[in-house]
Length: 507
Ligand code: UDP
Image (cartoon, rainbow, N blue to C red; front, side, top):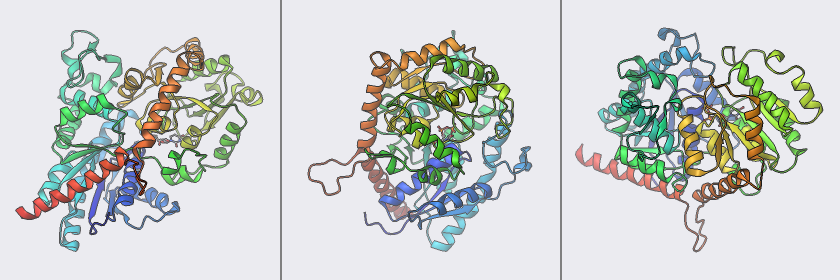
């Protein structure tokens, strides 16, 4: 596409699960336009983005970084707290409220851009949590586009629940969420404790309600999903918002979406800027020694963990199942997630026994997730259902065993079970009494290729095809249609350029 050089300013919420997809979105926009993109965030996040961008082999000359001053100790947070990683749950609300302090520096940044370039940026792309960006953009002669790093169903659910608090007026533990069909009711246990307790007057509602409302008044929404895989979620989201929603996912490196993909470790490093030592290579070598679709991969994302009792039961269940597994393990709830892992949290001699028998590999802290999921030996993913993990798993056709823990994860899990048929939910939250027998039962169920397991794998395979089809470009190929995500990106850019002309006429 031959557009004149336009400028987009991105404002991600400060969490790994948000910053990684924002950077991927920047790369995706850059691939289809020659726009220049500035990602504006706090100093420590800029540092880690710098190292991620500079370690990338391809050229990202058009992606710039701008620092927004931020001082966590001004907000009753531990010093140098600039992401949610390792943040105690009790401080999460301080962190959310602290993010509001980015408005004035963001305003200064955009005003400077206007002075320098003689015109406002084409648009802001901001996190749904940054509803303040809508007024900011409008007051500076441009528009705000909200980017949800979640899926359509999960986003429709959490935004509608925050704005309407439907569980408050429910007469039972089941309730209908405005916009969702009556028969697909939600259960109170699917709400995280802060939403469950919300009544519109406490600090969580006071943060989320105005921020989500601000985002519902933006120019439109971008969603990290694929048009064909979430029909219900998209219908609800579009109906509730009354705004365009462009599905431009999956925001996953193209290398992971090729049919013959054996990913190399560079891909994870370029995405997350994480140091992965020899454990990453060891992990893939270990997978090489296992049979096709035989390994259960277990991970609860970048910031969640389970309770000590649950960890013990999960370990016994895995051992009793006799099935091979790779488990990304961190200290249980209540302990420093980055602290040393104590053997007492697992059954006596567990790690050595699993290693000797070649049954299981424990990876401490961080694993090359996308490489693991794209490995032919990986059969199932026991996941907290964070949206990035879901998209990564489905893009590789790997079905899921859900164990949602926080955020909108329980809504994602519900959708994976009820709408996609690619998952079974093992349990929910960190309080549940999950026993090892249930763990073993679910593993037996999903590993049964002639029963439920086979059905879920087949469904996941169909979704994988749709995800990969969405990024297909016609490349001059006669008769081959462009994929839906390619078309959505083109439509998004065309809509922005046409809005810009309208704004120019007014001014
Ligand atoms: N991730 C990883 N290795 C790990 C844990 C997580 O590479 O050991 C990556 C994972 O591939 C995904 C992201 O971190 O891209 C986690 O995002 P998600 O939305 O699944 O969960 P969150 O961490 O935001 O709860």
